[in-house]
Image (tube, rainbow, N blue to C red; front, side, top):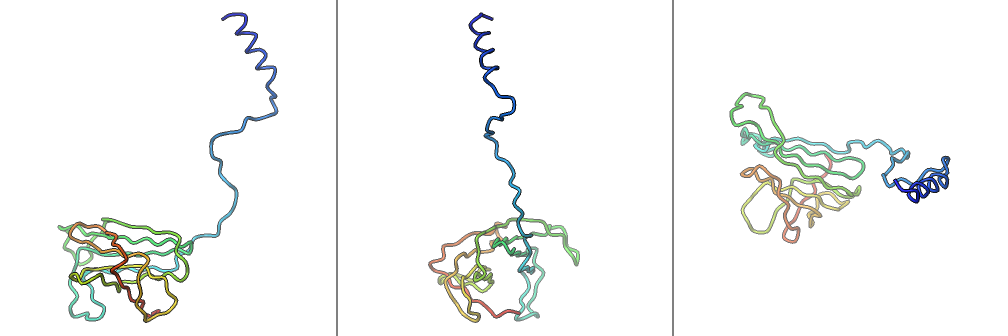
Length: 167
């Protein structure tokens, strides 16, 4: 190593203050405490269930789970049972899910959605409304596509969702 290079390193070392730390470019954890995120709405149903006409219920290999948290996060899970599992209590596994965040207290989850003039399909949505027993344009709408085992988002312009009263 040359004399000039050693002298440069020595000057750099002497100029450093051992009590002073260089700013870190790594993100650091904050110490703020957040309130615990609690479940404000939760539901589960088998897609073969008809609550209005229970005599028409059929066993479906698809089930839907919905969980809304106090932070305004809603997650919808589409579960599928194994096609070889034909017992009375099939084992469901996750097929697809969708999560939206930033929901307000006025945003309501609903299973009562229609879409244009197309054929009936199971549709779910989120409507911003404080009035029950009322139809309106949803903020979000999805079709529960059991043919492809997925939850597919739809445009909201041709959709209408109904908010039933609290149970």
